[in-house]
Length: 587
Image (cartoon, rainbow, N blue to C red; front, side):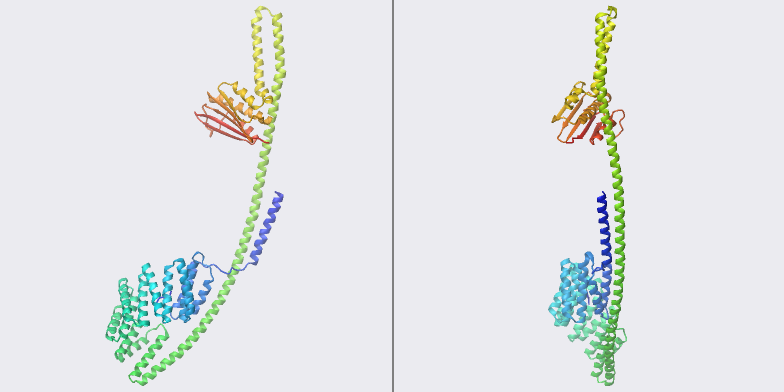
């Protein structure tokens, strides 16, 4: 049968030590969790061990139950429901063997509910089989047959031929034993033998054949029963059940000598239970009594009583031994549990110390990185301050030079011109007039060049009229340059206006000198919080990935960086160049 910052630093330090002491407190005060973790492999191993206790011969259901109760308190992870269902199924089977049918039914129905929820067909098939066995033991034929049939349906769905033969045997046995519906029983035994023969499942075939022979014997067809059992023994070999049935058939036929011979031969073999041996001894005593051999009857009755007493004593010894095993097992498990607690404590303590070291290392690394970033920030601020000072000095120096050229040298040249003009009117002879006029012309050109240089160094219109007018004047003075202004016309900070003007001047000069452009576009867009300067040309362009030399871009980058602005250069060879400068306007 089948049985189935400083403040910040101080704050961080406080947080660190708080975390450390909290973790240490947990480690020192913790116990082992109520549910320890058992792997699926270990859980299955223990299930198999308990199954051997429960379903093996001899049965030790209490030992199996002790293992299973402990397993139910374990945590099996993602397959917890499946393994819980398996454990409950075995617990129900154990209670059925012990004859405690109400407990058996409770655990089996609970296991069936779990199997249905997780759709575990193989487990459900085993549970239905055990429910059939339970109702068979309770002589409840209809329920037993119902659950055997439900198990058969799942076996057919899973195409499990071996399980199909077992359920056919179970159903036939229920009809034969509980309802005496031999024709129905024979039908199921025939199906079992047909499938067993096809898949060469000898055990199922022999069980069905023995059951069939038993039906013939019960119906009084002893010759058919004898023929069938001899055929089974010849084809598949002898076994204790076939030999026992053979003796029963001889007894029913009145062949007492052969019956006694078969049963005595059976006693020489290893039997699976002492109860089976007791039954055989009683049968031999009954036959001897039937034939009037009182001496032999007394002999075998004495053997029967001796074995019964021995069996009772053995059962007592086995019970005591099982209790001793259970006690020793409990002690070992308690010792293992304490070792596991100690191991988990040291593991957790090591984990806490590791986390503490990681936290301390993390804080030192964070502070070191913060310190490096602060040094880098200070260096950048220092460099920007120096750059800003250089630019401010450059603006001041340009203003001074422009002023000196205009006010000093310009005035001297003007006076020289007027004096020369005076001399021309009064003292110069005609022969020197042409040369004199040429000198005046050169003087005029020098004055114009001086004004141009002074203007480029620091345009007067920049300080008086602002960036828009100065940029427009500059662009209009250069061929092929177009200027556009978008947005508000309010003025910027003087330093920003000077810087934007110098960048524009540098970019236009670069385009004129190096690109060979025929068209240059200068645009300034004024927003509320930023200003964007764009200089675009259709010249020869260049490769931005190659460091450009002699184009003033390095100087421009320095100026933009000093104001924490952004510089974007978009250049393509033979296409042109576009430079965008974006500066934020501080309110």
